[in-house]
Length: 419
Image 1: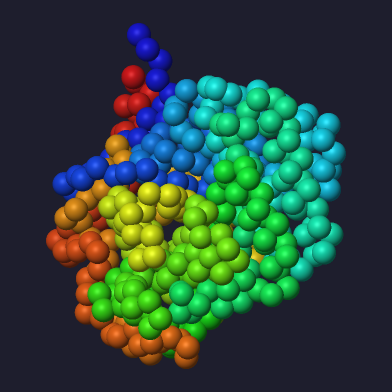
Image 2: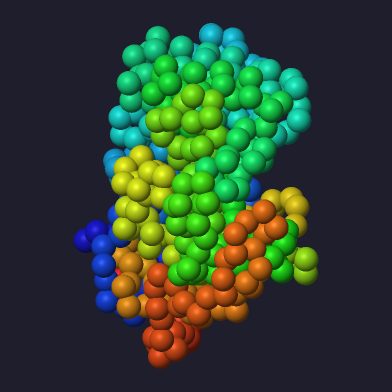
């Protein structure tokens, strides 16, 4: 008789009875998720595999090259981006050290674990650290050279993730430009991407825009719920959410430097379910709407107004878990789709097979704020229920399932161990 892992099955059953199957399904397309581990209470990587599959994620981004994670996901088909921290940039300029790192942290796990990309550093250009900035591109080149030497450059690319703060102008999207002081560095990095075929990564958080100015930024617009939206006066393109406006500002900024066709991937975006008193909008309901509506858009394979076919747009949700040891404001520890126990932090209407409801609500009506940022055209008050509509009855049904799951938890655990 097969011996089953009771903890894994506990996670799977909790997903089923906590409201994830109280909907009629429509298949979800590829989803990417960031798997951070700055915590002391997370489940083992083996127990994370079914959680990743439960949201239909086929791509995972790590901030390191954790051997436990890479082994646990062997033969799952999940694509991995592995990371190399800012503290390693100087060391990786040495070709021998770069080759040793690639052999130990990438080649050793191929082909069982599908590693497709290495991110070198994170948001380096906006740290205002000249040493880090000067070390970034040489480290990227050295790692790519190691991949070439090992015959892996056709299956593994090298890139780095940038903060949206590299932009000097981001509105309207067609006026997007790179900060003047960063243009020399960004241009060299773009040349590297063009020569090696690697994507340009950007971390984009509409939450920060709303938090900074909640009286002037429409909540519906940042949560993918505005139906009227805004129009770029230069292109006449219509935007119904802030994230796509931010992405197109990046496209414009790259085009202004002569790089019109490079793929841009969103390496991080998300919304916290909890925050400090001054972190306006950090609530479970808003996190549910943002991430749920984002995933809904992803399932439609919908591109931005500037690149409508969406073929090269990859988005990685931040993050898989709430991470209790992250420094900074409360929000930093509450971006997770899951609690460390494996229970969803809030319902996204996704089933245990990576299926998204087309009848369950991700966006109930919210109080929107009609005044836009000073430099933006008006984002009108919206009475829209968003991309997905949910009835109070459906919510109550899901809540009843969750209540039931807690009430019968001890029985579930007993049954798992009996089997």
